[in-house]
Image 1 (tube, rainbow, N blue to C red):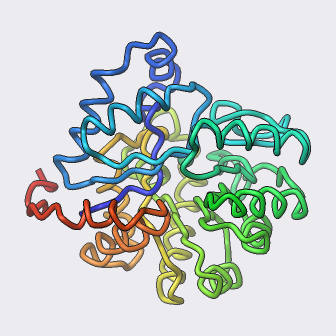
Image 2: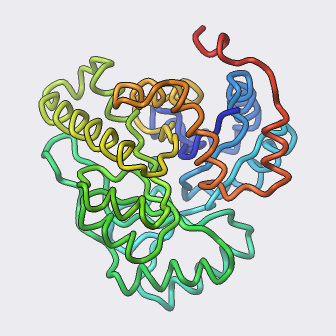
Length: 310
Ligand SMILES: [Zn+2]
């Protein structure tokens, strides 16, 4: 069985604004049932969300329970005031504000904590990922606090400096990790950190011949090819790579996105069979699944190898 370790359930990969409207209007139950059904049809039985500011997690969790699919959510991310990620979460300015928000999140029942450390990878300017939002001291404080409550942490980080900081601060997983180098790969492997490289957003833009982004195709190609290279090196060095599609991101559709990611991991030199295995083995760690949950997904024995190519 497969696990997608990075999705955004409230985004659809097509229209950012319209997708969010659906949730703001409260008109999404049937839609979410269908998305979960779609995942299950292709053998994907566990999902890990990257959070949003829409506060619909209760309803979504309830639907997941009814559909018998594992859905893990940080509810909303905690990002640094005046930095990237307003649609993913709530802003915090200092340790005190973090602590207050974290307590609220704990009471709401978060499954993991999401911290955006840098911005998105730019389509326009090579290696532009925005600035690093937190200091090492702040990041370490947040991660230590979460760990004290047995809550694992996903850090969204691009650039070698940001990923290096997240490793030093003791994150459980690194999301994206564009533009990292051998040292970061080595340190991720050494510290048993799960890396979710999310190739699909750039791979899909690169291959799907998108008119809007065509003028930036040189940067997009460079970013994508560089990331393939880094993923390949990471795999060779024994980094624990997890499969996360970033479904919901532009041009990455739910369910399909998972197999896009597998295809691109394959392009990076990881066989399809191995990538599917990684999705499960590192997915159970990234999602921090309980023994019962692991047994539940292990117990699903259908043969999905044919259905997924339809
Ligand atoms: Zn994401």
